[in-house]
Image (cartoon, rainbow, N blue to C red; front, top):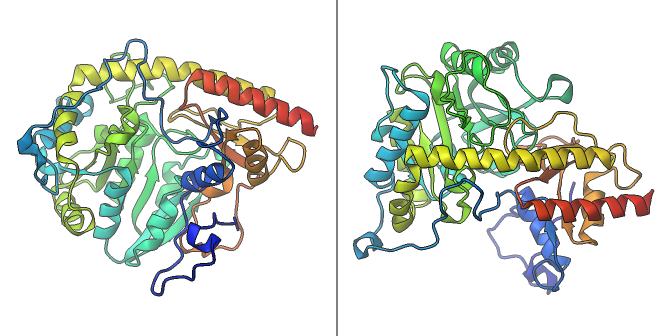
Length: 435
């Protein structure tokens, strides 16, 4: 479907090593390998990465000071517990209770939290702990889900198509129909969604939790973008306001140990420390026990010094301060990129309500730029990076022959405003040259 980046061994004719299968790269990693092959990082030219999956990590107006030094206590050079250090697990539980569960009888505790060395390892722990079942997942969604849902053979991934006509969202009726009709025991998705930026919140999110509970179906929610929210608070919204909007299904859980809701988050996006590789899983104690057991053979636990350094970052007032700064700056960048793309003839069917991506439809551009792969290749020649839309047609095991979203691409407003301005200038020049 998409040609793979040749490995260095293949390039010099080295034969394949027996016993190893061909493992595809996830969308963003594939894109960056292609960019490197085109000179990114070594040709001396300035590149503009509008495909990046991380936010800018420098200081923002109004945000807490960035951590630029790390003191390592010699006692923290030992292995950390597989489920994480107690101080960080306590702080994660306390933060969720503060943000989403004030005055609720059932509260998260240390035993409801497992610390993992990054988002993908956290998700891998969950996948490894799953039994034989049908697992639902949405299309389009995060590219890394494809290989993740292929590597473990205990469950069968079942796709659920979301379309532009319905805002790339799933209403309660559709969810129940899919769960009951396809015999799903679990559903896995991102909220806000990567790549469409669509968001389930308020009453709709409460209905999702209720559907999960009533139909005995575990919902695994990737909430890594849950502080990048651009919508006003809905009526009767359970999340804390305080001018810093955050959305989590944790607000609608009745009993933290019986409702089948599993949440994944970390420092990567919402705290803008992707290189720290600190994430967490929040859910019922029985689930935490099992994902931690999976972590004991998958990854062995997270980085001990960075876990300790992460504890003060989860102080509630600092979290609110960082979130307010993020939303101020990223709202500005979101408006710029959406308006700029529309002015270039790239359709934005639904403006992102969360995350920091724009799901752009290239169908109105002149051929071959109306194809996401060709658009990506052409932009590499002018040092701009995007991600083709076909990567978000999550297709575990490549069981489906026909790929969707050929005319789409994902563009990120994670980088700086200067990068957005210069990158879109080059896109405009390319489109004009091909028109």
